Length: 251
Ligand code: PEP
Image 1 (cartoon, rainbow, N blue to C red):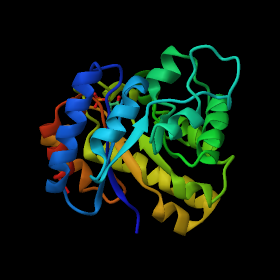
Image 2 (cartoon, helix red, strand yellow):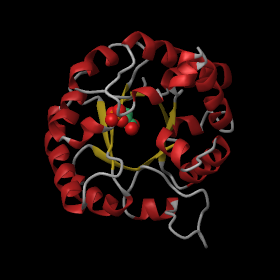
Image 3 (cartoon, helix red, strand yellow):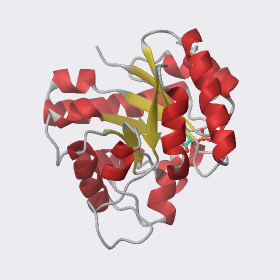
Image 4 (cartoon, rainbow, N blue to C red):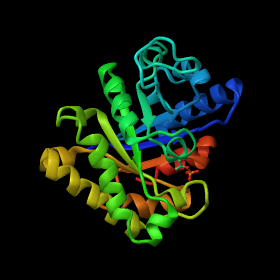
């Protein structure tokens, strides 16, 4: 039975004190969410150690938003997977569209990052999704399929147990424009089919696939009711503990 997850991507928001406060509020309210829904907060690197401490004893798990594509060494400004695990981080988001768009994150680089993250024992939330031009050209299935093939097909069925996929149509991120439940569901079903073709039905059925893109308390219920949508990757609404928890309560 695949796990339901609601993960908050704080992006480059909150200073340390605000981050700790937010993490503590999420941890305190996490008892009000359904038992079968996992909660993850993806805080900025600088906050991870303190956020891990703040959520200790609750069901909330901690994620980074990225990691380096090398294990260690002369890579000024980078943060390695070993550094992440050493501060109590359990997950990392990889391939977010903002990193693909602004920081030259390629599928090739992502393969290296996923390898390192899994090797260090981190869970991976791999983001995929088409941009507006690709959606308007009717290429969304093709784009998402190739992102999945380029990255995840380099891994094994066993590795897939530690990988969550997040479908995030770029045109819906931070825009207030949400994919309709039908639009999201058809891509989620396509992702599951592509995974089944490579790894078999069982792995595909067990893989958690999140929806991300202007998900909020008012639309989460309809999205999460879809057969192949197993939760959400939440940006803006994750910055308010009440909204984040309300989204998790949509199950
Ligand atoms: C995101 O960036 O992962 C995201 C889903 O953002 P938002 O919810 O703000 O659209």
